[in-house]
Length: 171
Image: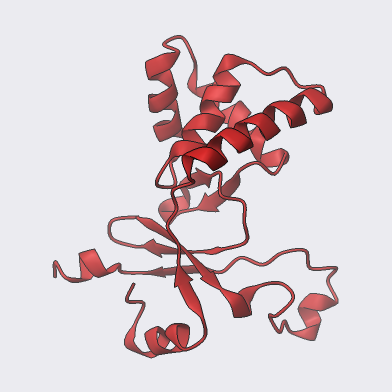
C-alpha cells in the first residue's frame, strides 16, 4: 500500500505487516461455538438471525457496513429488518466479538477480526486494509504524558487514510 513516499519507507522499515482479512474456515467454526457459549452464559438468546449476522461477519473478506450485512442476511431471512441487524451488531460489539471501523464520510464498517491491528482506508474507493504495526501497540507506543494523565490506556488503533495502490494507478 502506498501511503506516501515518506511514510512508505518508515512503515516498511518498522515491521509493517499487511494482513489477509479472511478468517480461516476452521477458525470460523471455533468462533461460532465460542459465540454460542458466550451468549448462553450472558443470558442472551441465540437466535438464528443473530448467528447468521455473526457468521456473515466471520466469513466476510472485507469490512461490511450494516447495509451490506443486512443484504447478505436478508437472502437467508427475508423478514429480517435493518433495525434487527443494527441492534444485533451492536450486541456483538458490546461483547467484543466484532470491531467497528469508522470509515469515510462517517459510515461505520464492522469486522469479526478482534486481534489487535490497524487500518488503512482509501479515500477514493473506500476499501479498508488491515495491517499490523508493532510500534503502535499499547505496550510499545510512546504516548504524551497529557494523554496518560487522562486515564489508563487499554488499547490503541491507528487509522491511516490515503489513496490505495489500485486507485493511485488509475490517475
